[in-house]
Length: 94
Image (cartoon, rainbow, N blue to C red):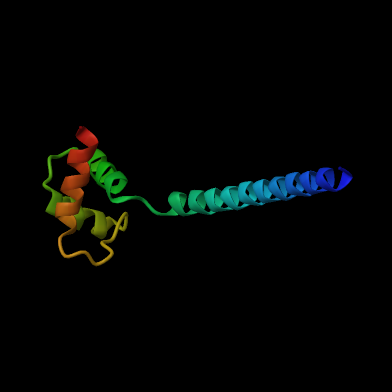
């Protein structure tokens, strides 16, 4: 009887330790994502910033060029970043 109780206690301790380790790793990941987010804008955020600054209507290709020129966002090498930006804008509107 006592042996079964000891196994249950060990199991509970192991579960608690795993949960604490998981919480710590999630907190660490969130902290690192937060610092990266502060230093680097997404394409949508950069587009909004450019539109806010220029106060003129622009198509997506012009937005991509302006974002790169101002250093807000640079394409990671996609073949058509303006199409990707357009799709993201349409998705946000819905």
